[in-house]
Structures are given as structure tokens and as C-alpha cells.
Image (cartoon, rainbow over all chains, first blue to last red; front, side, top):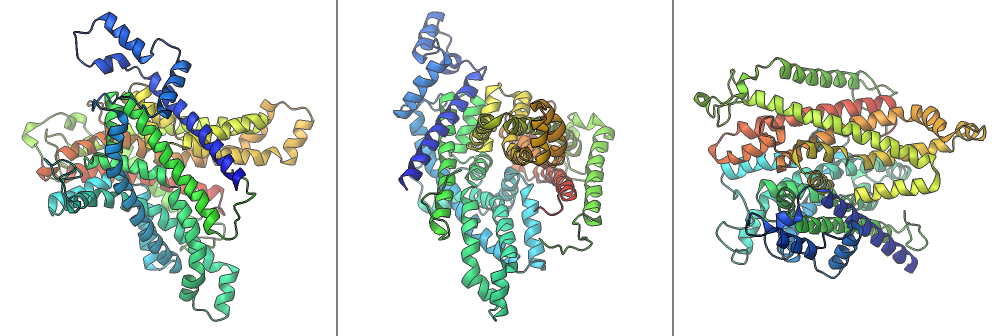
Length: 326
Length: 279
């Protein structure tokens, strides 16, 4: 166990350094001049002052020095100041983290539970009309852009039926603190549905295939030969076999989830991390873009690690000790 | 996996897939024909035809400036397709190079390649796209490069595994013992074997690349008002949501989804042809 943890932590640190280096390099390649982006349209600032700012930013140092300096700051919690919001990046992310988490968490949960159940049904009744319907749906959704689903839902539920609000995470004109939980949920509903509808397809197809394989396996045939009805076999013995890989696959989909949330947040003007990432990317807010990049990398790493651990912890056939990590 | 769809033979590939392939190709050819033969005069503003619902004259309706939405959608789709296809090809070539290099140049090269794949996959794809697009200064070029430089990790993984298997194949080992150079082995032994996997991977990258191009242009990267990609049309439709012009968002999106689906069908069909027993 300790060696496992040690290997994991070294891998984690190396990966984070590599990812931050990649993000830092990319951002530094940008033709956007950080000093100009910082000053904005203020014309009173002369050349000397620009140089002073460049010096304070450390822009006169070599890229490697700058990366070391920046990484050191990041580790010490100084993530810089967002140019769009004129406040520390950590506080922007802190404010936007919770709405995004609610959105992604809710969508992840619902798409997991519903997708798994539908996948079970489709696989159990392979080639029935239900299976055809669900597989068709899942295949179709696989080539559907998340934002288009969002637009369709918005048209149907907000514009046509007037059931849900058209934008934002709480009623327009209120502060985040003033909105009630019910109002927030009301605003969360449609973006969450968008993400769930799209996220469901992978888990349906995966579960369906696993159930089909399971029902053909030797121990399934044996159990049924001994008189266990297929449905009872699936519930009492099969679920264990099908659910563990499903959980792992679903946990490993955090990257797609984050990407989907960027698009959903854009459609619904939902004030989360994804929307901030888009703003930062378009308007050249380097510190914020880097901050969100780090957050998203941590988020994916968390998902993958939990997936890895869950596999080892839940599956009694795999022991944690002495297993080489890939 | 045992088969059960109607018309599927024991080999797995049959008329069933063939029919789908032909239909998909016909659809795409039809799209290109539309792009070539549609009169581009409908792209100009026409204030006497503002916000018209779909009709025979304007199957996709018109927008708030009286522009024909079918023509705009077809032109926009062609922009998306062009970017998607070029980007997917570049990504697939990167994947092929890395995959073969990992197998040819020994342990350290292989470690480097797997590490690159790990790093490439440790960010959400869309975040990586935004970062690259930002790095090259946005614009259409930014979208193109972002999509091209970010789709290689998964295919690299597949090709590397395949190349590693080949590496220990007897004829490659013997060839090496006879003193053939790494370059000879890579080009004469590895590449011919990797062609099917490469083609399948390339075809299956198309739908991803097209969808990501659409997503990036939807988010507002690579804004080009003269030749709007289909993502920009959909972003515009959001602004006219409350006017009740449903066709602005529904129909272009539907055409995009169908086009992506057709590429998916072609990819799946070719995959089935080359590797009938794989899932």
C-alpha cells in the first residue's frame, strides 16, 4: 500500500508539472501582450511605466525562470489577478466552482443512474424494440453537439412552454446570496438536463454490452441451466459484475463532463468555471485561463484516480498490494 | 459478439453495412453538390424577406437580415467540414509518427510517447482546444490548429500498441538481425501493417474533429463573419431565441448532426470491413 501511494503521488506531481508547463508554454506563445492586456485602453501610461510593469510581471526574465516563478506562486496560493473581473483568480474560481460543481455533479449522478438502468434493460432484452430504441438513441446522441441539445431544450422548455428560466443560475437582478435554494434549482434544471441527455449515451452502450457478454458467459448459462430465471440471475449475481466497470467508466468520463459543462454554461449563460474559461480565452485573461486549466486538470485526475481506486476497492478479485500501476 | 442484425453474414461485413456506406456517401456528395450549385446570392441581406418561416423557396427559412438559411448552413457546414477533415488528417499523421517512433527507437522513446499521450489526455479536450486557440491568437487559423493539434492522443495509443506487437513479430526480429535499419523496418514492415488501423482511426477522427470545430466556433473562437462556420450560425440563433424563429437553431443543427452521423457510419463501416471481429 505505501509503495502504491508513493508511486501514485510521484506520478501525480510529474503529471501536474508537465500539464502546467504545457499550459504555461501555450499561453506564453499567445501574441496577446500581457502588459497591454493589463493596462487595457488607458493611454496615460508611458513607455517607462510599461517597462516597470513588465519588470514587475517578470517579463524581462527567461521563460524557464518565469515558469519556475509562476509555479512557485501557484503552489503558494498566489494565482494572480483576473484581468476581466479585477479580483484574485482564486476568488473568481471559488465563486464559480460551486455552481459548476452542482451542475456537473447533478448531471453525472443522473446520467449515471438512468444510463445504467437503461443499459441494463437494453442489454437484457437484446434486439427487442426497447434495445433498438435505446441503442439508436445512444448512437444518435454520440454525434450530437452538447450545445445544440441545450439550444433545443431552451427553445422547448423556456421559450415555447415557459416552464424554465432562460438564463443564469439565479433570477436576474438578485445577488447569488439572495436567491433561494428552490430558485437556484429551477435555474439549474435545464443545463443539468442538457448535460445528462448527452452524457447518458456512453454509459448506456457500455452497460448494454457488458450485460450481453454477461448473459452469454459460462456461469450465467450454468445458473440458468440449474433453473435460475434470467432476470433473477441478473439482479442477484450479474449486477456485481456489470456495475463495477460501469462506475469506473463513468468516473473516467470527467473530461467529457467538464467539456460538456463549458458548452452548457455558454448556452445558458450559467456563471460557472466553463463560462469563465471561454471569457478568459476570448478576452485574453491569461491568469484566469491558467487557473481554470489547472482546476480542470485536477478534476480529471481526481476522476481517474477514484476510478482506479474504486476498481481496486470494489472488486474483490483485485488486491491493492503489489499491483503495478500503469 | 454474435451477429443478429438482418442480412449480416458470418464474416460480419455484408450488404447491411455496404448499404449504409453507400447512403452516407450519397448524403455527403449531395451536400457538396448543394454547395456547388446553390446560388450564393441568397447570402446577401434582403430586408424584404426578414425572418420568414421555412417554405419551398427557403427550406430553412431566412434570418433577421433576410439571408437564406439553407445556403448559409451549407456554406457553414463546408467550412466546418474543411477544417475538420484537414485537422483530423494532421492529427492522424502525428499519431502515426509518434506511434511508430515509440516502437522503433527503443524504451526511452516509448516512454516519452506514452508520457506525451498521458499529458495530452490529462486536460479536458475543450480546455486544450481553448488553450491552443488562444496560443496562436484565435481566428480561423486558431480553430484549425487547435483541432489539428489535439486529436492525436487516443489514436497514438492504438497505433503504438499495434506497432509494439509488430516489433516482436518474428519477421521483424529477423529483419533486424539481418541488419536492416530502423528506417527500413519502420517504412517497409510497420507502415503497411498499420495502414488499416490508421485509416480507421482517421475516419473515426472526422466526426470528433467536425464536432469540436463546431463547438469552438460556437463558443466564439475563430469568429469570421464573412464565411460563418455552422457553430457561429447556432450561436447567432441563441440571440434570436425569444423571437420565436425556431428554424434558425433547429435546422442548421439537424444538418450538422446528420453530417457528423454520416461520417460516423462510414468510419464504422470501414472498421467493420477491416476488423470484422472487433467491437
